[in-house]
Image (cartoon, rainbow, N blue to C red):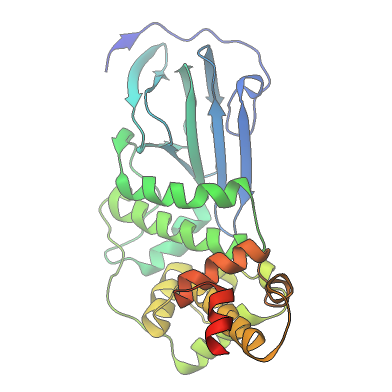
Length: 300
């Protein structure tokens, strides 16, 4: 880190994260049940600025999706310079005044974690409450980088199952953050399972008609659990995450259509709640090990 001169204040229109809106090449946002997700990208080599005044919004985690980004973060009139490679992360406490100069292009996936989530997640921890995250800047984190890459397509093109999928990824990110940056309290890792009643209720909610609106926190509350506790218990009980389990059920339904009807693949995809025929074929092949057309021919 090297000291540089203080940032000159420029009056420009900013978005909710303090980014200069005019300099952003891409700006995407997706609201999960607990977290908010963003993708911010600047492609030019000009300087841009970030300023976020203090608030009670909680914490922000940024994951660099591209190499060779540099920013100067200010404390008063002094600044420290940080370099980010692909997969490097930073954390920000929204209760602090944040000012930074961003030098050249950047591409970040960002996760906003409200304070209420930390209070709820503490129920799952051994050794006391975690009220936030330690401050880190430019640290490589392969786990968060992998989760960010998995999340990016859903952020760019939200689909019918986006809420369920991003809730799962959000809980995975939050659990990892608490374990590594939450002040030393580690999530409880004992094996837990759902009771038969809770398992059946969770499956019923996943299969209900309004599947695109069901969320992990909703199902967890129905089972009197936190979201992270529910995810571990569901996977231990079924061998799948909720999103994976739902896709398997749709593939099983599709098998019945393939075996007993003459419907086209596009019609079956629609009947089984896949986005389109391409999505149906991709998921079916992952689950069954062969394409829907090949599987239908093998049954005949």
